[in-house]
Amino acid sequence: MKNPFENLDKILEHRTRLQIMSVLITNDAYEFISLKDVLGITDGNLASHIKALERVKYISVSKSFVERKPNTKYKITERGRNAFKKHLDALEAVVKQQK
Amino acid sequence: MREIPEYEKDLASIRSMMERSSKFISLSGLSGILAGVYALCGATAAYFTIQYPNAPLHYLTYSVDESAALGKLILIAALTLLATLSTGLWLSAKKARKHALKLWSPTSRKLLLNVFIPLVSGGIFILIMLYTGHFGLAAPACLIFYGLGLIQGSINTFDEVRYLGFSEILLGLISALLPGYGLLFWALGFGILHIIYGAIMYNKYDT
Image (cartoon, rainbow over all chains, first blue to last red; front, side, top):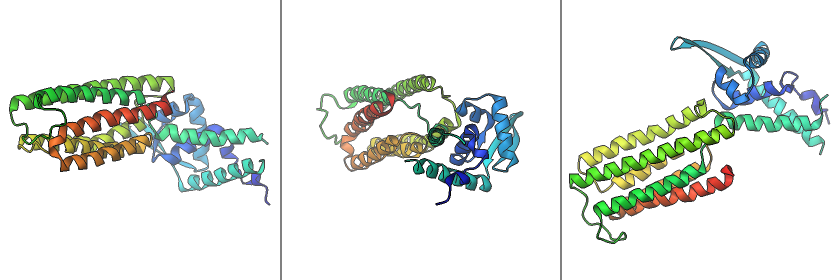
């Protein structure tokens, strides 16, 4: 049997990034502020992980103005969805193998 | 390489993030129980307004058409609704604080919108029914539209809310066949069912 560790996604091995992806896979779109609330982390921390996910095109960003205030929304991309599923399968396989 | 328990924690955190971000878990079972108690008080007050001295199980063959009694009924309903909403809001805020969650979040906004669409259309429909003199089916209509609202709202909260919704609709339909027992069914649906489901949810999620 192939080593399931090889299928783990390096980007998603970081828990905060995995959590961001979990929120975005269950919801159509999520705002920066709400994402910060649900994860319970600081602005800077969230921004750096979002940047990492954006760079590999796992999530897409849309900026607009709502009542003259900037509003940033994130969505999961098709590429991100596939990567998340693959990583989840690998996680399950890794945990199962140890039992 | 990381340790295996770390990967198990990853899996657990996926599940908890999915739930936290899409389900409103601050809904309190206790507020369901209290809503039921308020509804029973309201139903008792309504009983003394329109039915007394006939027994509660007496099948009404007349309908309420005096505007004085109707005004009183609307007042009782409004007070019950106000008490229910404020208790629900207060207990949810308390539970949200306990779980370090925001009461006003994308999830609670979605929940409210989903509940309010059937509820507001139903409310307007019932007011039109009362205005045009179709009193008999007002109580069943309350139950049915409320049930539809709960089923819509249950997408973003606990599954029990969906079953409560189905029970309300079923009760509403039976009640539509027996319009003379309107008040009795209303008390069953808004009083007893709320207490039962509130108690189930309190045991499962509040403690």
